[in-house]
Length: 97
Ligand SMILES: [Zn+2]
Image (cartoon, rainbow, N blue to C red; front, side, top):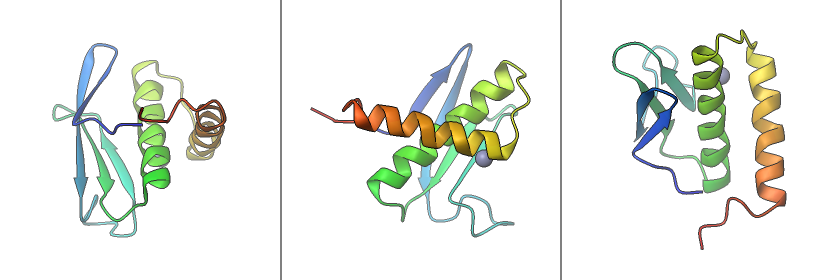
């Protein structure tokens, strides 16, 4: 999967940044998403490719959850991340050729 510099989610466009620290208050975080005026997904730059793709999907699920007001728990987002990544990977949808 190509991690884009911007991603559209419905009517919104989220900037995608790959950075040293995604949340200075929580330096252990590997991804975050901000849904306010400055919509942005931040991914930590030391993740390997598989993990970065998976965390990117995780943050996209948070975006969808917010836009559709689904009310997913963090645990449900984690499970959807794992399931979606599994299917995309198993069917070679993540290949970049
Ligand atoms: Zn999350």
